[in-house]
Length: 261
Image (tube, rainbow, N blue to C red):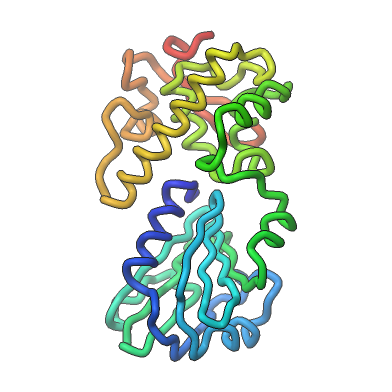
């Protein structure tokens, strides 16, 4: 599932390819992806307009048009963006196709159809309506510590709650806790001040490193679980077998040797 690093890479990709071009055609190929808007309303808000500004909040991407409205994109489990020059390059699972005046195209590609597209007038209203917490990259250490220390649930579960920290999902919560050497099952409220600070530091490090890897299409560092550990189920640090268990319905993986506390 695309999390903050992936969505930030999509934002930069869109900035590099699709800004300030007049939109001449919009095709919604699967109406299921639309959120609180009809096909005609979406088309009316995009045709003859240009994208002029982008904003990411957690896993949500917003793209403003010169008409003042914001196109909203949530990428679900398998969503992504693809920019191309010829229709023969259209991806197999294109769900929304935008054509620009120079005959270039932008596609919202989503195999499993869990992504969502919409139009909003006000980003702040959208964030409040969907109960999104602060984007994790905007958080100060003190606010992070205050939120974490008051939650009597496993720290991995806390990190994944979008109403607390917008942007972190299953894979990056695993990675953050692995780099911090913190067991994901530990109750957040039982963590020491030192442990909370370490999680905060590793959160910033992991998300920054992952974003650069996604933007530049480089592999993750070898000491990351995301490099191969999650697939091989072997700890890249000590070689122990990883343990996997459910947290709020999601399967998390960790090293019982490196993250024993």
